[in-house]
Length: 193
Length: 219
Image 1 (cartoon, rainbow over the protein chains, first blue to last red):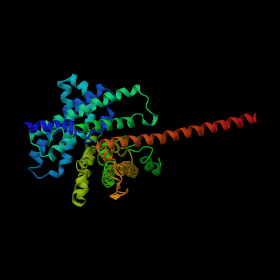
Image 2: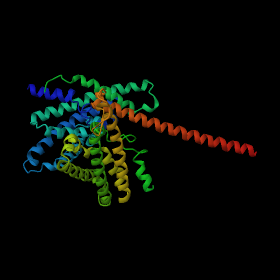
Image 3: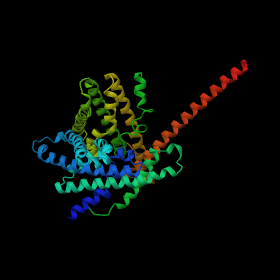
Image 4: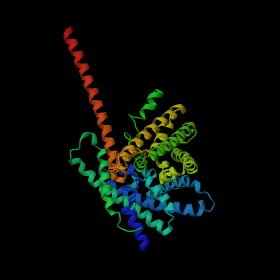
C-alpha cells in the first residue's frame, strides 16, 4: 500500500511528466491559453492514459512476451493507442454525448501526445505489476492536469502584462514553464524511493 | 518551388522547432550534451527521410481515410530500425537517449511532414524536404545542447572549456534550464526576424520616397 502511494506521489509531483520528463509538451503549449480548455485536455489525458496504459500492458504481457515479439513494442503500442482513441471517440459519442462535447476536440490531438506512449513504455521499463501500472497511469495523468492547469492560469494573466515583442507567445510560455519546473523541483526528496 | 529553396526553408524560415514549434519533447529532453543531441538529431532525420520516401512512393495507393494509421505504421517501422541499430552498434547512446527513441514515432515533425508534404509531393521533393527539415531540427537541438552543456557543465563534446575555478550553472542542465534556454533562443530568433522585417520595410519606404522625389523633379 505504502509502495502504491509513493508511486502516485512520484508520478504526480516529483517526476511530473511534463515539467520533469518533458512528455506531451506540444499540447501543453498548444491548449494552455485558457483554463477551461486546459481542464478539458487534462481530463482527456487522464482518461486515455489510463486505458492506453492498461491495454498496452496487457498486450505486452500476454502477446508480445509470450511470442518473443518484444521488438515490435513500438509499432504495436502506437497502433493500440491510435485505435483506442478512435474507439473511445465512437463509444463516447454514443454513451456520453455531453462528455464527448466537452472532450471531443481534444481526443484526436491525444494520439500524437507523446505522454500517452511515454507512460505506456515507462510502465514496461519500470517493470510494474498491473495494479502499480494502473496507479502510475492515473497519477501521471493527474500530474499532467496539475501542470497544465497552473500553467494556463499563469498564461491567462499574460494578457494584462506588457511583454517585450520578441518574447511574445511561445518564448515567454517556455520561460514560464521553466520557472514552474523549478518550482516543482521543490518536491524532490518528498519521498524516499 | 526550387529544390534549393525547398531545402533552405527547413533551416530558417520554416525551422520545424524554432518557427513551427513542433517536436519540443525530444529537443528539451535530450539536449543535455551535444553528443546526445547529435544522436537524436541524426536518428530523427533518418526516420524523417525514410518515412517521407515511403509515403511519397505509396501516396497513390493509400485510401484517404486510412492514411493516418498507414503513415504511423510506416514511421513506427523506421523508428524500430533506428532503435535496433542504436542498440546493436551504439549502446551508450541508446542508453542515454532511452525512452526518447521509441517516442520519435509521436514526434509531430515526422507525422507533420508526412501529412503536409510527402503525401502530396514527388519523391525528389519529399527527399529534399526531409533533409531540410532534418538539418533544421539538428541545428536547433545541437545549438540548444551546446548552450546548455557549456553553461551547465563547462564542457563541449566532452572537452573542458574553462579552468577549474569555473562554477558551472547547474540549473542549465536540469529540466528548468531546458525550458528557459529554449525560451531565450526563440526570443533571439524572433528578434532577428523582427529586425529583418523592419529593415525590409525601411528599404521599401526609402525606395518609394526616392521614386516620389524623382517624379516630382520631372514635373
